[in-house]
Image (cartoon, rainbow, N blue to C red):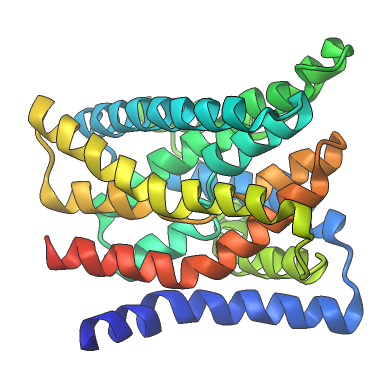
Length: 314
């Protein structure tokens, strides 16, 4: 119990406090969530991703191991979701929103600070989380946009939207500059570092503002669907991740701390990007918002349990 409380107080509570400040600010001042989202989406997040990819030591073997994990993990998640979607008989819009609520998880503004706290800033686990964040940044901005619009007609606009996403260009630029050992001039690097340092706090505040902007009461007809989403994301997700880690370890071998980082990374709540996509393309925004809110709320307990179990078995 002492270890459990230590994890709760040192890993989860600090993030919850910042998120809570965002909720308070929203209730007090009614902040413009779209402006905050655009700042995160077009400025802080790309700068954060660029800085991490440009400066973090990431070996080819670690990239291969992490991508193999992600491929198997998301494949198994997708199969489980499709079974649920078919059993529940969802309409196309609800099917896509359910997929997004489970497949897209908060690997950035929740996952990065969680990783830093849970593993005491270990550069190896940070590298794992950076690769996951990179993948989780690309997928919502490509497949996610396609997913919520696949049942609609204007696919030309969909592709235009996909190719306007800054993260698509930031990732290859950062990797190329690092790969060719291109030095970035200080007048350019310093602003990038400023934006990088502002990312985590701003992102957590933005998440709090978004949660504070939601209807905190869940509708009766949505209880089952939101519960399914939360169970798949917070409970089934880490269980599947542990199974995939076992398979990857058998196939290529994993360092224990890498295995732990992969499992913890899978336990975070639904990504805010699922809400942004739902709002932007008018695709079940209420369900998406409720899924993010309640998964974030319940993750205070579930993530603590996952970290506790990983450390006990590490």
